[in-house]
Image 1 (cartoon, rainbow, N blue to C red):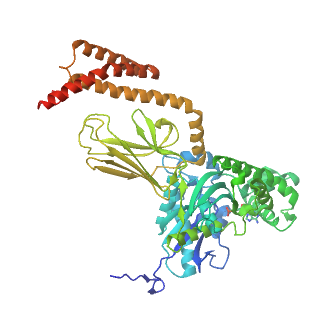
Image 2: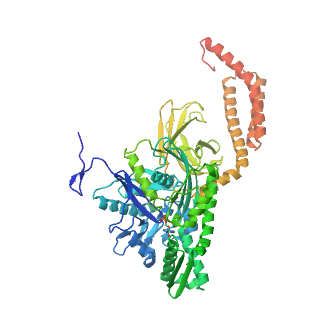
Image 3: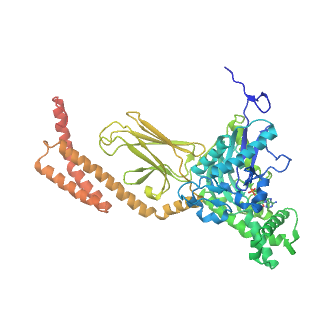
Length: 620
Ligand code: AMP
């Protein structure tokens, strides 16, 4: 039977095709875009004002929640009840943000340092997911008003370095806002799509996406090959952006006008006026060479050349990140084909020049740098709607994923920098006779011992039919979907018993932590390798000891007393070695035991086979 959709708002039969919208959920500003006649456009506010919706939420006295420009105005008059930069808290625990508490003007709850952060507003507690959902609802409302129809499907962008928990949190925020989030897309990928890159077959190139916003800087190196986007590397600074330029200008004025810093900071309103004036000065240099204004009796002046001196150290910091990103991507600068500029701060001429000099390329800045990510998200949405073929998205995992094996060793299943989506499987078995359950603990990180890595979750494969150790065949699959969300599946192949979990880590890793984990893994590589060697030797020795014990029991009648005694004493020697820390001694003693018992095992096998031929049971 055919289904008919009715647009309740319009009271008419709805368009057959769902419109999927593209959303850039930003730290400072967010916006929504959609495809109209084959072109992406960003949606303006009611009064035809700009396309940007400040990512600010205000909780008014009457219980109303206000998002956007009006909420931004409350940052000064009612800071306690006005939330900004919530994106910085997505998928984070209090531990993660503790050092930045002073950055947030509102109350972050610190009762439980391990679990996800909550924000207190009046006497209610909100999660970053709920707060982000208010912004998403506002964007949904904006486009519904514009198009006069209900919208319930979206693509949302996130930074390329966002981990699993942060992506999940973004997806959940969408759900709460009444949106079915069909895809989480990396911001640099969306920016490239907005410039039409990767949309045609054979369009193979390497792209640097330079994104300098109000408070964050990201550089991503992407490779596009046959419609596949691969993030080769990312770098950046989560506390570097246009706000730092504004602060540098204010500091300059404090010096040049002899202003008392403390009294300025103590006066919220004046402070804010200075901030707005500094921002206006900065923006004016896109057109003019000189800025001057009288504020509160101070004659504030700034020439373009002084401005550029203030911007230079900030620009240089970003260039350092670019250098690292190119290195991490294992590329030479000459291998970068295009540079795309994203974020309002890339409007500053000096920034463009520096980036252009570094990459030795003209930068792509034709599109509005504030809109480019949302426009790309709309294109991605269009691709998902089936309107553009041949486009696929592929990213890489920033850290290795694996499981814990005997002795606390990390067995990497999906190595760092693997392409996603991907599905990787590996076979395991049990280590104890008759083992019915197998605990599968999933970890993320580069170290050899799981205790140094981050646990993402665990589950127990139950109901393995009792079998001797080593016989069950347990296949473990890691399935990473296009959003970078991990599913782990375990199946005992003989009995088909299976279990699976979707990994929803309790909270995410900041990119600083991620970098720290990588550095530690390099610094400790040698020690880790030694420990791994020792643990592996111990595991192997324990298995051999178990087999030797079994062998003696099963072949009691075949072996001479001397053979049994020598085997037992070699086994004792191995047990002593296993209790120590000398990997070489364990290996040597293991070899001795093996060498001695191997001819005995052959003889025992021959005898058993002969017995079996006579119709007797093996092993008797
Ligand atoms: P975004 O986070 O991408 O919205 O970027 C906002 C940042 O861009 C703020 O720091 C703005 O001050 C800055 N910005 C906007 N317009 C300009 C301009 N014309 N010149 C320099 N910076 C700008």
